[in-house]
Image (cartoon, rainbow, N blue to C red; front, top):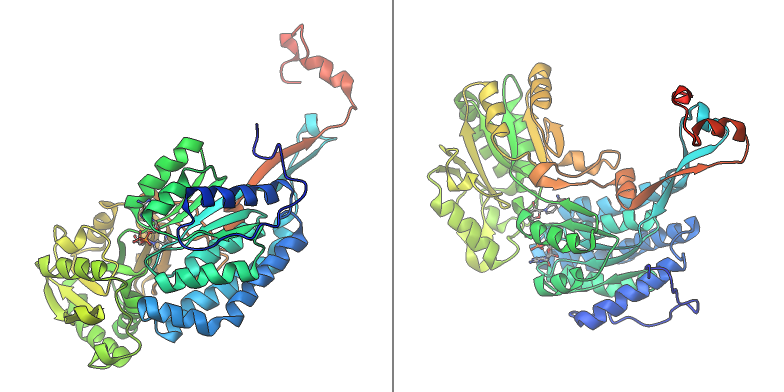
Length: 478
Ligand code: NAD
């Protein structure tokens, strides 16, 4: 029996229990309910999609204060950072989808050959079904709502599984989504690894996962059971290569902002710097000046410095810092009580250092020295392709060479993070940093099946005679 064979034609008015840990039965009930709505075609019409996208806008606009409070509770996110990277990102993405939806939904007519000249040949973009969106804790609102916007735009039903680590935002999403969006088409399931594993036993039509590479392997294994297509938005170590002539003070400001935004807990944060010893000598004072200007000489007291999300992550970072053979040049202070780590910069870090093993994902920036541009390129190419790769230089041939000779999910010269704010650009990894992409039309495509359609008439049957048996080899190439 196919998923849509027995839709409940009466429609469904069940009130869902969107609370923590609904249990396997509860999860199945939710998925069945969403599937019924999908099979009834509830999410297909453009008007429905637009209304739900409007509802996402209202959810964010009307609850900005609650959202900011939740993000502050989870990560001590400064208001400016929360607005820029969570609220505005969601609003922009939603408005972009609303403004472009009609174009995206249009059938795409394709070129034809002689044999299909009289036919209608087009790509029809169809929703996939009931999709699962699993979010991570570092941008807990954005990482659920951005994929949701794409899933809605593409006409799907969606189960949302926010990260349990960013508890306040998880709770808020579980309260707000059912208040604003159709309960028959979208649902929040809360919980941690166990609940997510149980959820993954169900069949979805797509799984969109944001999180670590380690857990991504479990996601892929679970998806394999049902042959479910998967998008993986993962992390890795994003390098920042600084080379040649450039304004080192401007470079230090942009680098420090991108690295220490959200206390370094960004998947696209520059993870480490590669530069020559000469550049390092001028970069360190420039970074010190930038950090003192941004966060004062007492960053722990500065409201613009966020906190590490949990004790476990704080311990992990402190262990990394303690195990490093590098020299702390800036920062290094920490306070477990407050889950605080000062913006920290280290020099004399070697490729074999503990800081170069895993993604740092915190406010610690190691600097490694290279002698030539080729050294830097070879260094980066010895590692897995990162989610983002940054090069800082005022020399276009340097930027061009790095772009040409490396691979990464995204690329940005002379800045960090900002490339992900443009919905026209696909956002996603390559190799171990992820598979698939989203943002803007790319997200719509991720949650869409491109159905190749050929509508034929009955004309020109005399030409078809050429392909019917008994075969005549002389007819090949008709
Ligand atoms: P996390 O611990 O919040 O986990 C992510 C999700 O996986 C959560 O919803 C969690 O409940 C679920 N989960 C945890 N263990 C599981 C298991 N065993 N089985 C099934 N589900 C499980 O987040 P994290 O993994 O610590 O996230 C940090 C990572 O995410 C970093 O590597 C970061 O670079 C990456 N990240 C990537 C992006 C991106 O867009 N590419 C964005 C943010 C974070």
